[in-house]
Structure formats: C-alpha cells, structure tokens
Image 1 (cartoon, rainbow, N blue to C red):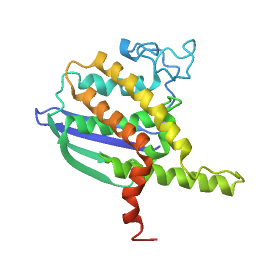
Image 2: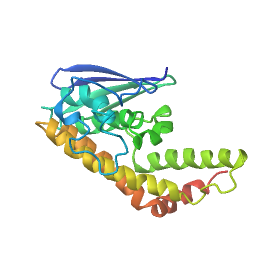
Image 3: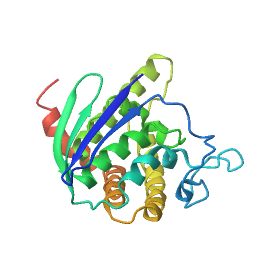
Image 4: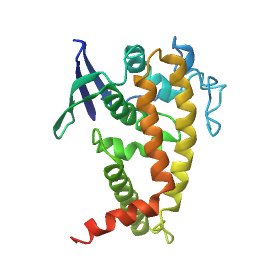
Amino acid sequence: MDIITYQLKLEDGRSYAFEIDIDRPSSVAATGPHADWTRLESNRCSNCPLDPATARYCPAAVDIEEIAEQFVQTLSIQRADVWVHTRQRSYFKNTDSQTFLNSIFGVIMASSACPILTRLKPLAYFHLPFANLEETFHRLAGAYLVKQYLSLREGNAQPDWELKELEQLYAELKTVNIHFMKRLRAASKEDASINALQSYVSLTHLVGMGVDDILGKMLPLLRKGF
C-alpha cells in the first residue's frame, strides 16, 4: 500500500492525523449514510460520466467528506504545523488552513474513483505537498511525456508530444473543480475548505490555459542541464 499521512497541529490546539491510501478501494458504489452535499446529483459536474443508477454518491466527495467536515468552521487564515509522511520521506511546513487543505484535497481527489480525476493518479504516487504551479506542471508534464515515450516503445505510432490531450484533460478538470466548489459551499460554514479548493481550481485553470507560457518560463532552467 502507498500511504500518505498528514499530521496537523492547529494554533487553537486541535490535532489531527489523516492517512490517505492511494490504492484504497473504489468508492463509486458507496451506499452511505453520507452528507447530502456528497450525493452525485448535488451540483453534479456537467461532464460527469457516472450513471446515477449505479453511483448514488460522488466518489471524490465521499473521499474528502470526513476531512471537509472536520474543518467546516475553520477560517482559512488559521495556521498549523503540518507534517507529511510518505514512504520515501517526510515534509514539514507551518502554513495556513487553506494551504494544507489544498494539498490534502489534491492528493485525495487525484487518487479518487472519479473517472476524470483518476487520470491524475500517477502524480499521487509521487505526491509533493504544497507544490506551486511550476512544480506541479514539471511533475505533470514529465510524467505525461514519459508515458508517451513508453507508449511509443509499445508500438503507438502517434504519441502526443505536443501535450494536446493534457490540455484537454485540464479543460475537463476545470469543469470538475468549478462544480466541486459548489459542493463545498454547501458543506462549509467558514472559508477554509472553500478557499482550499479555490486555490486548486486556480492552479488547474492556470495550467490548462498557459501550457506554452509555463514551458517558456521553464526552458531557461532546463537548458542548464541534460
């Protein structure tokens, strides 16, 4: 199992430990009881491919439900000491609630059973907590291009070297994240969870809209090696 553990100590004295199993069982067929905002038909994504007849709840919403409910009354500016433990190493950061929830939601949603979000699962295996835009895109583009190379070796004559499918994926993610924002607004009394996902939405939107710009900014750094 690939387990990522987030340990939190908030400035108000609360402490939490959340274990995230990247290869956890699918939650597509979850039966509840779960909060009303996790129902598939509650602010359902317009591009959702799931069948309501077999999926009563949104799998990504079910996966973050426990954590989101813990922070329904938490302000996004409240700070915490955060330790993140992966199989390879540990990380520490003193940060605000919005930032650590953004990081937690990101890895949970990427490893969820949502048919769209699960395409990001390779990044969950190499999770980098609190990653910024450049770090996220470097990991994403690198993993995607390695997949294209391996696909070429396996006989695919038309690998996607121009990242066209990656741009399409982020267009899909933008739609998912906007609808997910509406779900969290129904669940949150304060703003930590909402602002955390807003950061995630902004990040995916920037990557989707500015692939060429991001690559251009990274090129001077990459020219220094290889």
